[in-house]
Image (cartoon, rainbow over all chains, first blue to last red; front, side, top):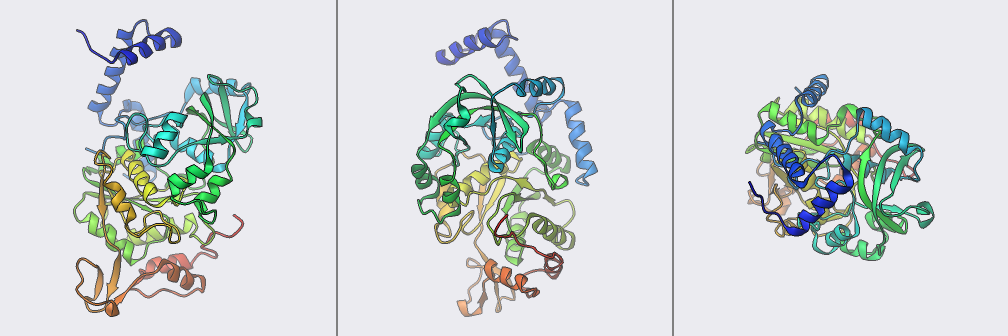
Amino acid sequence: MAVHVDRELYERAVRFVEEQGGFSSVDELVEFLLSEVLSEEESGSGMIEEDEEKVKERLRSLGYI
Amino acid sequence: MVSRPHGGRLVSRVVSGRRREVLLEEAGELPWLELSLDRAVDLEDLAHGVYSPLEGFMVREDYLNVLGEMRLSSDHPWTIPIVLDADPGELRGVGEGDDLALRYGGRVLGVMRVEEIYEWDKRLHAEKVYGTRDPRHPGVARVMGMKELLVGGRVDLLNPLPNHLEDYTLWPEETRVLFRELGWRRIVGFQTRNVPHMGHEYVQKAALTFMDGLFINPLVGWKKPGDFRDEVILAAYKALIEHYYPRDSVVLAALRMNMRYAGPREAVHHAIVRKNFGCTHFIVGRDHAGVGDYYGPYDAWRLFEEFPDLGIQPLFIREAFYCRKCGGMVNEKICPHGEEHRVRISGTRLREMIRRGEKPPSYMMRPEVAETILGFKNPFVGDHE
C-alpha cells in the first residue's frame, strides 16, 4: 500500500532514519507512528494501561475519584 | 470525549526509569544553564504537555511567527512566546546540535537538545505581546529583565521542580483520565488567580448550567505584590465548593504557570492550555489576564474571533454585579435596572476590606469563603517575595 507524503517531509524522514537509528526504513517509521497515533485514539488517553492505572491510583489517593 | 490536545497529540517529555538514570548521568558532564524560576516552571509545563504541541523552548521561526501572526510555524494558533533566555557567556562553547543541562538551584532539572541560539528584540517582543513598551507593565518589566539571547530546542524533564502544592497539582494526562472517569463530555475551564467572590460564582454557575463539569484551575507561582497567596486561593475555593457546589460537578486543581498579564493574547493562551487539560469550553471574563488599564475590558473577546480553528469554545460571560432591585447577582444582559441599583464587586475593595480584617458583606463574598481567608495571618504576597 502506498502513502503519499510531502517530498520535504519524506526527505526529513529519510534523514531521521539514517541519523537516529531504531528504524530500518521510512516504511517502518511510518508504520510505527501510525500505530502509535491510532492506538492513542482507541484508548482515549494515549497512555498504556499500566500508566493509566498509576494515574487513577494518584487520583484516588487525592480524593478526585 | 474530552477535547483533543492542541496539535493533535499530548506532549510528554517527562523521562523516567532507566533512560532517566542514563540522561542524568550524562547531564553531569554537559555544559549547563542555570534557569530562573520562571523558566524552570516553563520547562516543567512543556514536559507535562501543558503547552502541547510545543516540545521545547521556541526556535526562531516559531518565535517570530507567534510574535507576528499569533500562530506556530505549523499554523496552530499560539499567542504567547515560550522562550528560554541566556547570556552569551553562559553559552560559551555551546552550539546548535549540542545537549545542554538545564539546572535550577544547582540541581539538574532537565536537558535540552539545542536547535538554535538567536538574538531577540525585547522592545518588539513587549510591543507585540503586551501591546505596550511601558516598563511599569509587570509583564514588560519581566521581559526587559531577561537575558540577551534565546535558546530553542526540545527538552526532557528529568527531575520535578519542588512543589509545596503537589497534592493540589494535576497535569493534563491526569485530568484527561479524571474527566473520562467522571463521565464528563462537556467541560468548561475557569482560569483564576484570585479568591472567589460572588461574581466568580455567578459566572461559573452560569457556564456549568450547560456543561457536565467545571474545571477550576487557579494559577499558582509568581504573582504581583498584593495578590492573594496561592494557599489562600486554594483554601477559599475549597470552602466555596464544599458549601455551594454540587458534588461531582467540579474539579479544583492548581497549575503552576507563569502569569504574563498580557491581556487578550494571554486569554487565548489560557484557553489553549485548558484545551490540553481536556476542556471543551473556556470562560473568558472581563479584562481577562489584564493589569491596570492597558487593555479594554472586552478586548480579549474580539481576539478570539481571529481563531476559528482554536479547538476550544470560548464562553464570553459578562461581568456580574449585585442588583438591589433584582435581589441577586445578574449581568448587564439580564438586568433592566439603572446603575443606582447596582453594586459592583471590586477586587481592590475586597482586598482592602480583608487587609483591614473586615468580613465582606454576603452579597460580595460567601461567609465561609471570607472566614477562610481571614483565618490566614497574611493572605497577600509581600513586596519582596
